[in-house]
Length: 100
Image (cartoon, rainbow, N blue to C red; front, top):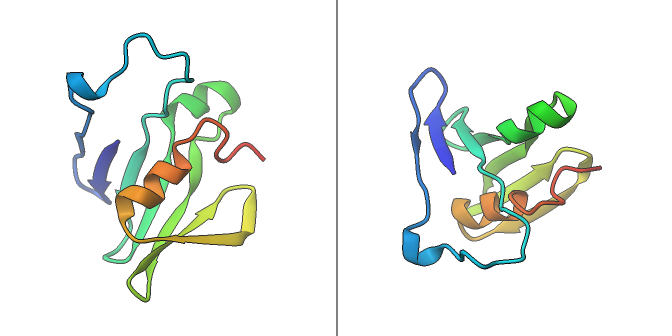
């Protein structure tokens, strides 16, 4: 995941070598960009999708009542809530996320 704030440079957070599985048959998890729009709102993008369909935006996350609410592109009426920002981003990072 790459975290950043609007107008600021972002650094990359990658799993450690021990957390990676070299012989995995699972599809590669998306390297998402997390851009803070405010103290309570984040825009989630997948740069790899820009090459595929020209639309890198995956969804938005909003802090609501101590929970992180996910609005996924293509599912605007479905709002899922998670205990942490990391869990919400992980939900959007699955290969099928945002592919409506």
